[in-house]
Length: 226
Image (cartoon, rainbow, N blue to C red; front, side, top):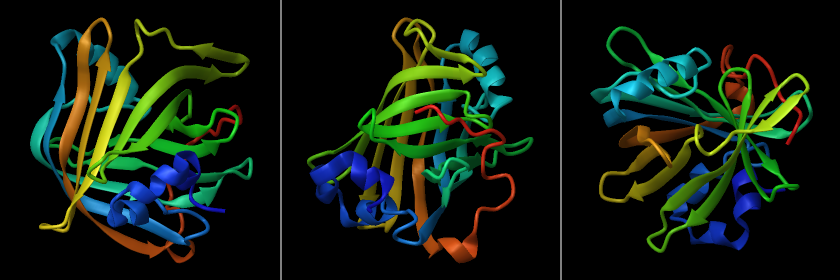
């Protein structure tokens, strides 16, 4: 068994920068968790009409309805087995904004059925998104979102492109500074840019078993449907 990310990427995983390979090898087999701390140079959102949608998503730790510069940032990538026995990795991002911290939560599993990483967004895993990961020629990682689905009770609905967002994540490693650089943007095909952030962070690796999954890191509700 390899990490959920290496399984999704196949041979392409070996083309990543060595530091990115280590960071995305976090998992039950490696026994490592990764905690990154740094600063986001900029957190932005689109035109004023998107703010109510961002505020609604923020009630479940999906997206961030605030803007800022030089915002302290933490990302916690901790592996665990979920209630259905699937290897899962947390992607919990905390932005220390004025007026109080804001979180953007996700948990990720590998979906053999969909041949991708499945990204469950928010505290209740109501939104599931296919993620496609590719190594760029410079060794950086490009992640693009695919189909979005809403899951609640008996409902399993595809989110129409008109109201959905397309996410693009670019992560690289700067050998000169020893820092990871990340740039995230979410756009809508009709309404344009919705939300994003960019900045840098340093990563440290800890024993996943000894570190454990701290209270509040796992979602309140877990979704079985892949």
